[in-house]
Length: 239
Ligand code: IPE
Ligand code: IPE
Ligand code: MG
Image (tube, rainbow, N blue to C red; front, side, top):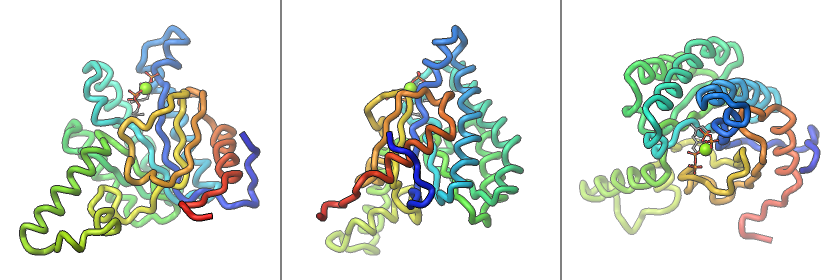
């Protein structure tokens, strides 16, 4: 990895697949939920670092539509941590001018989480320092199907000409409407896959995979990933 250069441009939008909490815990003989709890500290540090470095959008993959397959006890632990995080950190979001948004099928979350999310989103809506987008019960294929459904309804109602459909219009029907695409996608724990995350939006993202488990991911790892990004030459299909 290359060193981070504070004089060079930082990515405007960073997306992170926060993976490896379970393996981090297993390596220490701890229950998986302890890995998730430790991962919350990484979220806090990465969020603070992004704010300080001038990153404008940070999208965190916190719970996938496939993660509902996990044991109920683990799902409960994760939802409990989310509740704890929102309760403890919403004042920090306010202090740091951070706006919270969510993408995913939030209506599938426990009512308490939904309520808290709605409150934190409303409270932080006018902040404009950094936008934190949390992907919860999120699946990119579902997102694309949802967009297709919306578009088909509009076509059926005569509000959209199918032949006029283009990439921009389609993008405006995704959960991420209005947000720029990620410039840098980071996945921790060494897995080389995207696991149904932002399939449309990462078309031209630079991908950095690190072996570090998410609970160990700290500012130096973030800076190393940004350093790697700064060294890349993005061509977008051109020369
Ligand atoms: C990422 O860590 C957190 C979630 C997917 C919710 P994992 O729980 O997937 O940890 P590993 O991959 O089993 O180590
Ligand atoms: C991706 O991690 C989802 C999140 C980080 C929330 P997973 O651990 O669920 O992905 P797979 O199962 O390794 O592909
Ligand atoms: Mg995993």
